[in-house]
Image 1 (tube, rainbow, N blue to C red):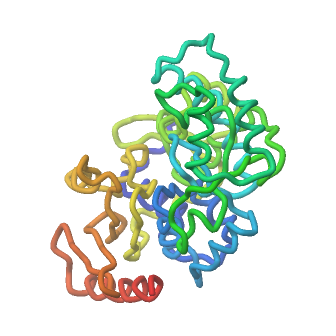
Image 2 (cartoon, rainbow, N blue to C red):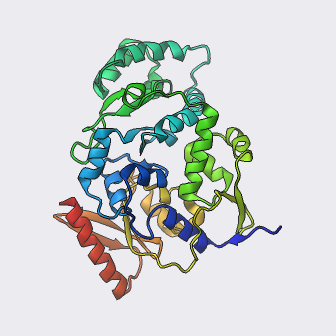
Image 3 (cartoon, rainbow, N blue to C red):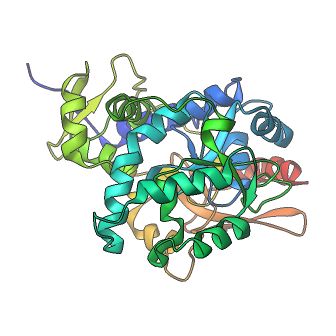
Length: 348
């Protein structure tokens, strides 16, 4: 049977639908975060802005409350970056990436296999048990206990830590207070295989249809571990316009290519703009070097017009200032200005 070919515009609309960027939905915070495949949150306001663009009626306190109530969790997960994920997703995500992260850390930092990291982990776990600790306290402990200095925080590949609110919230933006995930979330007893399968399902639900290599790139799990897990899943198969195979979950949304896409505002480091989603055309290649630049480690906040990045924005002196990268029609500019006013009110 000939596989259906999906155009870039169809892939774009699928991404927007799954990322809740075609229309705002009324959803619980945890459910929305699951739909998005988690939110990369290197800068604490990012998740608030991202959810504001996706959830009807969202307020800043909604996310701060969810973090306090532990329905969503903030910790270092995919690609060694801070993410906000649902409480039920956290143990599976952590299990899926843990061993691959350990192997990557040893390889990159040239740490020999004979160095017993489990022994370090036991001592660090005892230090952290029953408490919350600041970044400074943890680093002092690691230095005092001869942890390999090539990468002090590499120990977190053996011990799962969460960021404890109010640290890492809109109100207190530094994510500098930590606790053991097993005490904050509950048992972390999922297997690596269960975790990898869950990561694959969440990725396709949030970013699919996609090549298998994009899933591996997003979660930083080697393709050799991912491929046998995907082989056991029931998946739809498509081709892109270049003939590359794409896989997807059954019954995941595939809107018509001509589905209207409203203007939307995105925070820095939004996952839809990273290389794994390049196939969707949401970030035109000529703008990629503007958004992600060595002199701009936080990337840039952006706005979308017709499902693609068309400029950047900044909150300055109580208002959202727009910097288009291209000519914007009068009608679209009016829509952008209305959305910018709502975003400025959200910041106030």
